[in-house]
Length: 246
Image (cartoon, one colour):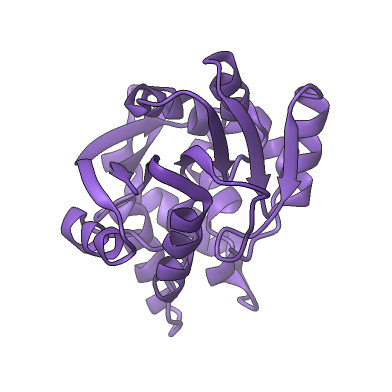
């Protein structure tokens, strides 16, 4: 994951990320210890703790970890990379929300190897990520705006189908117990909600590109008829939610 987070902006304007993650908690079927992999600002780490789990949060963003430690000083947070981390001892649950799609496809086996190693036998890996078709309209509009300028749009995310990711899990030694791919149109904040969303989450395609704001504005206007409804912007989210057991 290679992104410099606006940690305060993420916490203030994009709280839906962890609010929607609350439903994912219901898939957890074990007590004991837990790792919140990609814990961000710690909001869901705190919810895991409220459910009685002895939880540690791990994230690769020092900016978000700083906010997590301020907001939840009673909890333990560690810096770490999802593709290469170690725990002092294995845990009963590894939980992850809205993280795995940030990791390149070729590194996904490394993530799953680490998660498998981090779990006790019978331990659960419960996660949600962007799935096949996630934000397809947004990325499509950006790609077209890039193409009109003779530029290639490099997709910065990995959005797998159920079968694709189930195969990776099984190769890593997991048994898949639950999997669903579903559409979840998501309301964005404010009259500039879509532009703000692009600026927050779609950073790497704009590296070294002149006229970024013009491209963003062009893509937003192209999507107005589809994604601006009743005075509100929506993002065309598609989520992949899964539970796998070691």
